Image (cartoon, rainbow, N blue to C red; front, side, top):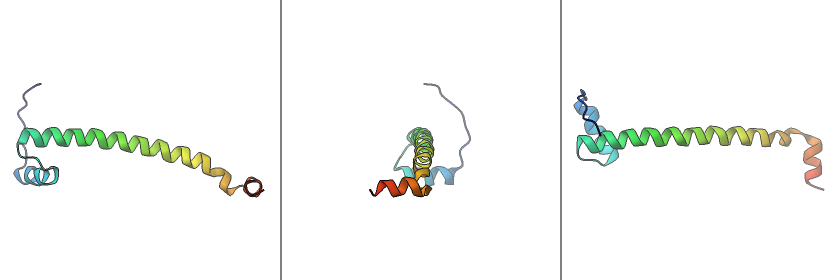
Length: 71
């Protein structure tokens, strides 16, 4: 683990602590960084899921395919 010297806006820190339920600066920064990583992962999964759904849903527009679905 490395020590870093950064300037952090006090009001932004306070709001982040409130949202994240953290107390210390270290907790808050680490929680925010992990949240960013997790959010990015969820977004990538969501985009992939949406792409797969879009491909699968193409048949919904095809009347011959849909007619066979009800036979």
